[in-house]
Length: 111
Image 1: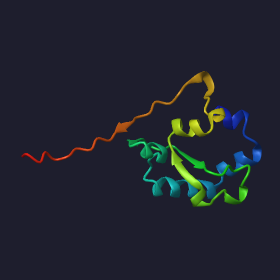
Image 2: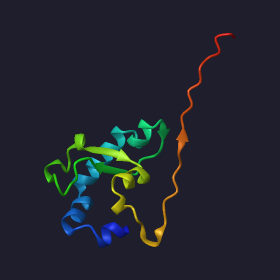
Image 3: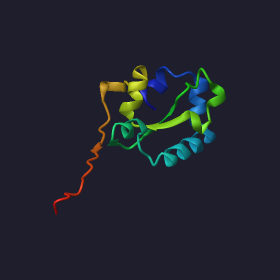
Image 4: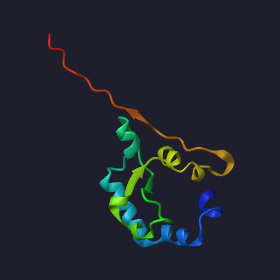
């Protein structure tokens, strides 16, 4: 369990994120987004997603908790940009992440 879950998240939210319904929904969204961070893709980078983010926050909109249109796949770094208060890990460690830049090649018309 990470630091945020253990020390800051309320019991109701913690229970929700452990539920079978959330786990199924989370897997659906990751598959839908091809396990890729959608924010990185907008910036022409391919990064594996490891988090499913509620666009409208769970605590403010519990009715959208399992609404796939309110969920997006993100990498740890992009999720931290949206929630900097949740990104600290115990011991200050940060995850290693792989990023692949996309290069578009065009054929040489002279050849």
